Amino acid sequence: MINITRALCTICAISVSTLSMADEVILTVTGDVGAPSGDPVWTFDLPALQSLPVRRIETTTIWTDGLQQFDGVSLAVLLDHVGAADGAIEAVALNDYAVTIPTSDATPDGPIVAYLRDGAPISVRDKGPLWIIYPYDDNEAYQSEEIYARSIWQLDRLTITGD
Image (cartoon, rainbow, N blue to C red):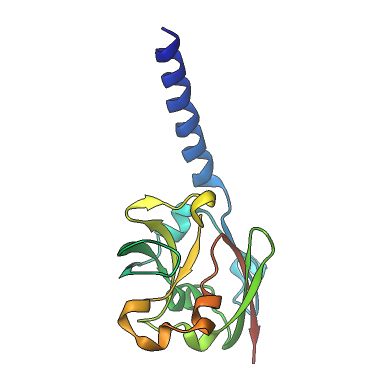
C-alpha cells in the first residue's frame, strides 16, 4: 500500500511539474526587438516556443555520447519573430553565464534553440530547459572552440544589440 501511495504521489508531482512548466516563462528576449503590445520584452513559455516552426538537428556533440536528436525553434525564425535587429545576441544562462553570438549565425541551416532532446524535454540537470545547438556534424565550420562556446545550455534570456 505504501508503494502504491508513493507511486501515485510521484505521478502527481510529475504532472503538476509539467503543467507548471507550461505556464512558466523559460525564455525572455529584450533589446533591439519589435515591441509586442508596446513593451520591448518578449517572454516565452514552452507552448509559445513550440508554436513556432520546429526544426530538428541530428548531430553528435562534445558534451554527449553518440548521435542526438534535438528539436527546437531555429534561431533565425526566433529572431525574425521578435523583430530583432542585426548585430549581436547576448545569451545568458540560468547561472548568469553569458556568451555573445553574432546575429549572422542565425541562418536557416544554423543553430536552434532546442527544447527537446531525443524526443523529451531537456531538464535543467541535463542542460535544459533550453540549449543553443548548432548542426555540428553538418558543417566543419561548426566544429570549432568558438562555436562550442556559443552553444550555451540552460539558456534563460537573450538580449539583442543592433549594429
